[in-house]
Length: 191
Image 1 (tube, one colour):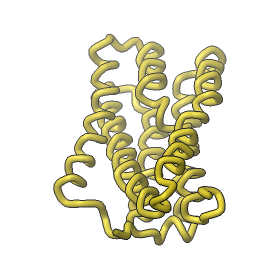
Image 2 (cartoon, rainbow, N blue to C red; image 1 turned 135 degrees about the horizontal axis):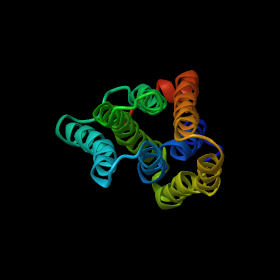
Image 3 (tube, rainbow, N blue to C red; image 1 turned 60 degrees about the vertical axis):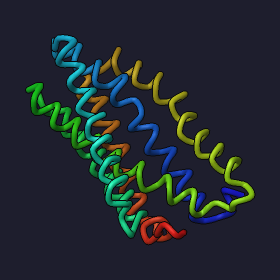
Image 4 (cartoon, rainbow, N blue to C red; image 1 turned 90 degrees about the vertical axis):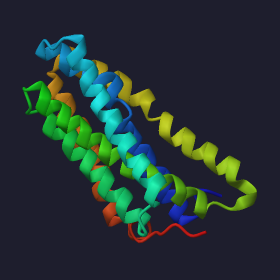
């Protein structure tokens, strides 16, 4: 049912792609960068925390003001923003600027998450909402079976900057794909 509905199919595929490149950022990539650059645990925690603060700020704004009218476009821009912030972090040696980049990545992730979730629920048939949500959950977590070992390989054979560039480019590519997917880009949350 999910894959025969064009909007739901687009949401599931884009969510899977975005999750592959965004979910590992805070728990894997931030510590990888911190270790390579010789940052202490406080600095590492500030990077991961800045990412969480960005997501929390967007969530509070959406709770207070509501989601954007064009949820698909907003989610696409959020994906692109998060990816560019992660890729840019590869060139940032200064911890405080890295934290800012992590904050921007969190803001982008928050925009994506707070808009794609309601869009998916609004587009799902009421009689199958639980099963449809299970498909999206699977799409969010199954890419990590590939992402985590790849990050481990990169950590062993390349620099942390290479991992940041690749994962940021992947998230940005998902954002570009979302912008190019007409049905997703023009999607609005309907009651």
